[in-house]
Structures are given as structure tokens and as C-alpha cells.
Length: 319
Image 1 (cartoon, rainbow, N blue to C red):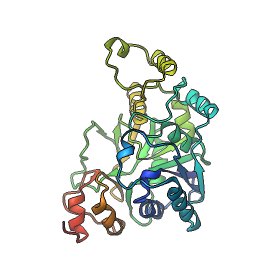
Image 2 (image 1 turned 60 degrees about the vertical axis):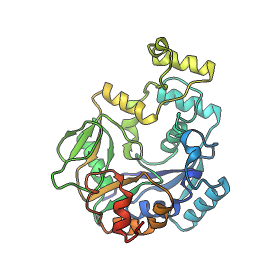
Image 3 (image 1 turned 90 degrees about the vertical axis):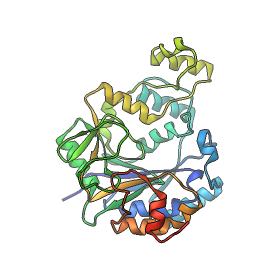
């Protein structure tokens, strides 16, 4: 039986240099899906927002060298620079937002245009996206991607699917700051997370366009303006900062009957590292080795953010 056509899309930037040579092969190795292609999308734009202060920022040349090495190793198939051409920005923003704001990144320096580019410029009917710092466990023989595709076919109101967030808890609950509802084999969310997800292109295109959201203004009267008018003002003033793409998606999920699903199957789960200093980078190969065995420290169950102290003890590193 042929698997549905799906590409793997991973975004990389200079901030990812300290860990990408460990995490990207790990993500590919544990995905267990016959992707049509595996693509690295390079953000070559100057760093802005909180990205400027990230530890271990390298040069664009180092980023390109790492990416070329991953391609030569057969980890990925293609390397693509994000397209920041004005004509492309106008065309893609018109499709995705129904309007054409100027900023390419949000207020934190996250590439909104680049995210759109990394979805649009892939082949296949589906796309799996990972941020390059993510960590993943998947039991051999299991595929959360296949399970997600089957869920989308059965429940067309589910637009985004991701694996379990954090190792499983015995009672099946999640440690989440946002509300969710339990359904048949998955958890329903109106909040969208952009670090790891599966989409079906045709369904996602039907969801578009979504309104652009801008960061809060000091002037109360400006906050009351319709999104399209705010976009027009920001376009001509050139001073506004975009809110997060995941917030824009979440707001539209709240306005519609659509959902984001987190699969409840304990055979696949992900972790997001928060602290990425020297202790984490030094221990990362051991942490990945433990995760790929399906192991985790007591106390990590149900938590999406990686508790570094617990993991350092688990892998035998003592501070």
C-alpha cells in the first residue's frame, strides 16, 4: 500500500548551529515515514527580536556548511533559502492573510514569511514541519504521521496534528496552560503550536486567508480598529510589529469549527528544550540516545518543556 505523499520541512537559522547537527538527524531518524523529500529551509535574514541574544549564534557560512554536510550525509534531500523578494511576499501574504503587511518576521524575530515559504515550497499532499530544536520519540513500527493522516480523513475539521506533547502520564492528562478537550484518541485544541505539526495542504488552503494580528498599541483607539485597517496603517507607517503566526492561527481556530489535535497515543511524543546553554549542548547526544530508547526521567511525564536538571541526572551529568 502506497503512503500518502508528504514532505518533511525543517527551518534553520544561525541560532540553530549549536545543536542542529544532533537534532536534525535525530528528527529524521525517528520519523519513520517515506517522505517524498526532506527539505531544510534556511533563514538568511538578519536576526531580530529575542533571536539576537540566543547563545552560540554562528555565521551564515557556518550554517551553510552544516546544511551542506547534512545533505551530503543523506539526512536531507534539498536546501532552500527563504525567499524574501517583495513580489513573493505580496503574493503569499495576499493568499494567507488577504492583505499585504510589510514585516517578514514577527516581533520576536520569528520568520512568518519564511514559515509560509517552508509550507508552500514543498511537494506532496501533506507537510510535516519541525522546528530544528525539537526532540522526538517514536516506537519502531509506529507512525504518528500516518495516524494523523487517518484522523484528518475521518475528522476533516482537524486541520493540524502533532504527536503527544511530553512523555505519557498514567492518567492520560496533559500539563497545558491552555484548555483542551479529550476526544476519541486525541486531544482537541483551539490553540495552535508551530513547533511540530502535520497539515494537509488542500485543507489548510481552504482555511485561508486569516486576519493579520499586530502587537498591542499604547493608544486605546488604535486597538479598536479592524485588522485590515491596522494592516493598512502599518503598511504606510512602517512601524508596526506583527504578532506571532501561531497566535493568528489560534484566533482563527477560535472563530471556526476547526481544531488542532494532539494525538494521545503514547508510542510517539515530543519534547521542547527551553534551556539551551553549554550544559544542554554537551549532554544533548546522551539525551537523544535516551529518548530514542523511549526512556525519560521521573517527573518529565506530561510536560512538553524539557526539564534539564532531570535529564542531566538521567544521563549521568552532575552539576
